Image 1: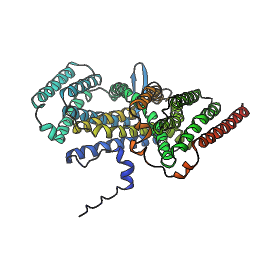
Image 2: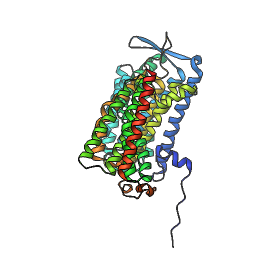
Image 3: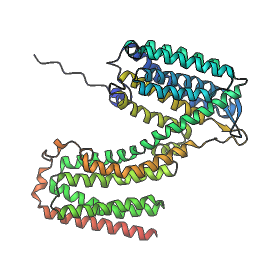
Image 4: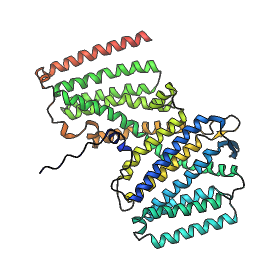
Length: 467
């Protein structure tokens, strides 16, 4: 008896499943915590939109930090403060469900954050000491038991009560709301520094985007074209791309496009060396075509990042639909969603999957709360943003893509060519358009040379006409 065919997933599941954690193999308590984390994050994004739409009509609180008078809306202060507490609850619950080498550094970081957030008095020092002694004692007696790992819900609510009490006892004793705003601003400055590592690693995403686009077209051409025709196509692209990028460079006056001109020349030299060494094959041709098609995408991303823009930002700024700050917060959260799925999909001895999920949501809540607070923290006199963190992160993104991208590409060419050409099993499949093999290989190569020379000459003529 044949087994029934499983139903095909719907459109929404196919589109968004890669950006959200799968709840099927987790307990009910973990599902509640995951759904609650997603609702909290989406709620903060919605509040970011409302605050942007409200503009200067919201009541604010002024505070002084590092000799500068700043202000922030009261509603942002309240939401960011609650998200700060909730983020640390997730983090501490996840760290406690891991090994001591994870828990103790996270607890020390929380102690430093809490210490910066309050005025240093004898009462606060006594509360800090009592709290952390109790926490360490409970952890020492229960770390080797499975109770907390098997009941993450109880673990989470225990941390929620403990963190809420110690935070309210210390921060709630501040004399004014201005002191609360000042301490929260100082704490989010530390969170912002910790997220810079994320932006450095995220710079490799522009490399992955270019490779994905190049690989998609390479696989499509290889699926239909026989090897002789495919080789001619690779030669045509390699010879036309320098003239095309020179034209784009002149139109944009952007020095990054000179890098896009240099890359095809290097690929042409590599192709000549491969041809002389008699190593020309479907795989090497596919690698050259993928890199050729990926280079304009990567250079465009670098250029826009250094100019303080991105692809979606350019489109939305042209239409005026969303404010740039909300766009930045939304895109950052979108990128974090994608990274979290891969992080939480692994189970390990030091970091179990349940701990990874809690750590992920704690980090995500702190980052989004930091961006919500920082994007609404303005100088009291000029009403300008206190910190242009969008420009800062764009520059880190571009620099990491520029200096980490080349070793990353070399590693893919040397060790992981399937990332450039697709699955190895596809290479030996017969092409769809087999009839093209009737034309000799030399004829296809002659056609490619003639067409590439013609197109290059035409592009050069257009370039001189513009000059």
